[in-house]
Length: 319
Image 1 (cartoon, rainbow, N blue to C red):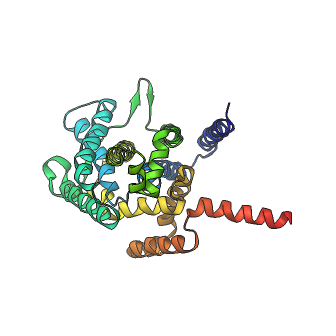
Image 2: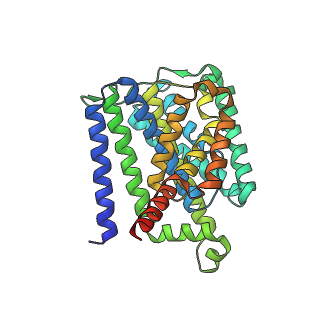
Image 3: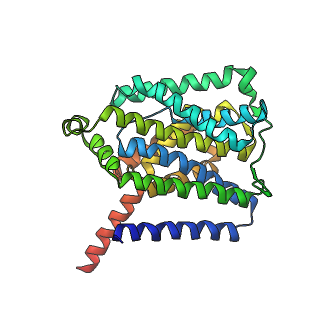
């Protein structure tokens, strides 16, 4: 067995143990909800990190796919009586189809132009959620979303939902790690470092960028599905431009091209509003300031920045 494979197995086992310990020891319902929201945000951060951190494609419309997943399952389960588990593939499929249709023209752009294209898409979807009141409930929101159940097991309790969400996060991390360590992952990193150079050595950059865009959208929709069946109520405000900026900030803070760093970024950005209630009106300024400070002082993100500082300290201590 390769050392990297063994190391990953150890990480996954520790991850699962930490989740189980949290579920067994944390009794406060509020803390359990916060941990669950961190898990949902981790899904969003990991999915966007695959697109931004590894493929180098900037997206400011990730909240749109998050919302498509949430609204698709809400509409199918409430209006049409679908089982949530049947609505799940439909919600993910809808997000993937939209991502494919949007990605075909948009991914021909690059840099700031791509960011503006995805920003426009996100704003259009947000307006659709708000104005299509006959289907989405409009600005008032969508209520009556049913809880998740599997036979005799229900996910109404916070602990059960915590295990469901973080189990999904673990599956997503394992899948993403396998992709990153594969030939596709090497091709994605080549595109990130230089798209023209990647194309020159035979990488089908257009096809691969579209595939990772659709992949990223699928897991954002999965996060939307989990969010909708956790809170039982959704509204357009949850999937607006600020949410997209928040997800980008999670990726940057945790570390670009760092799957494990996405957990740290998601945790910090989920907890930050809890700590800064007095500055809620200046949310965008706070996020902008955090992004600026991280990009200046820790351009590789907190995770790699902390590891670099530790390594530097260890070397100096060894001398």
